[in-house]
Length: 418
Picture: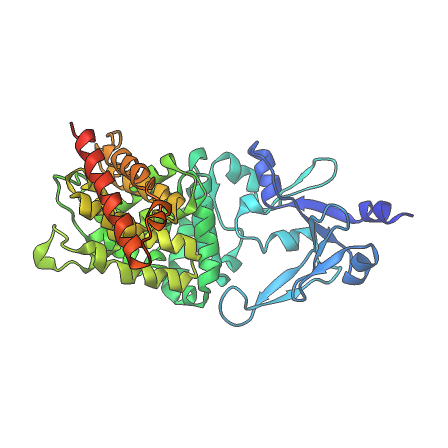
């Protein structure tokens, strides 16, 4: 018997998200399989390659899809890694499925298309409910973030979290177990949520189950901070931040812009109570808080860079039409627009999301972005070559470039305002 025929004869089942998404008529991108009544030795003999040492997961020799031996897990120690795995050939499909997080992820499908559904996942799928499979749910703190991510992903299908599941998520959050999660693992769930159509649901869910105050206390604190009602009819800074996030989704698919939306007003949590609802200097005071969360979660440098710039300079962008040419040139230099024009474009989009992320402001025009972009294009035409040809050197060239860029900005800004 050839290896492919032998592989086909394995007792294997499509499991998890692939089955769920098939039933929801969503596109299936990743397919995971469970194999019962087999051993690592047999899998390796059939040409599979093992992934890691701790779990019996193998890659198919041709498709490279993941095939995992059916396993049970027993909690030992803290966190999401503190489990002992048993992949004995006697472990049944039902025993494997019960260790999964949600009932909608605990279904399997055989080659004939028959659904194996021991924990009523189809019923919860039809009723649009996110419900934990078993009491073992409480053993893994990562599941709090995973359920929040699924709540964001399936918000458009009107899914809700079962009351008893939300209660367990609150217990996990209050137990201190979230502190065992690495920053990288939290960022992995957060960044995947930021790719969804409704990432705000991820953060609202974490706040509802008391997890946000543990993993990002500064963001959580925004819900208690008021804004001036004239510019922010929604008043609450937390609500505003979620509205900005929603607007960023409408304007761009980039995670960096969406993350910047979350970070732009963190400094408001440091505003003295006696000055509220005004927030003097919140842009600069927010920078250490952006640095802190980026360092904690090991946020990629490119994403961190934009978040810091949006935090520090978003009010400059909003007031662009009032700024003096010299202030605009300084802004361009601080934003490093000459070397990072794409990031400048992202900065403008994030600022537009901030302007529109307010109750009743959702459809306003944002001429500031167009204005700054035109000034940048005009100023970027100034090149060093002509000054080199004049015989200027070093600092003289830099000064001459700055002067000519300033002149270009002054001239065009007058034209644009008339």
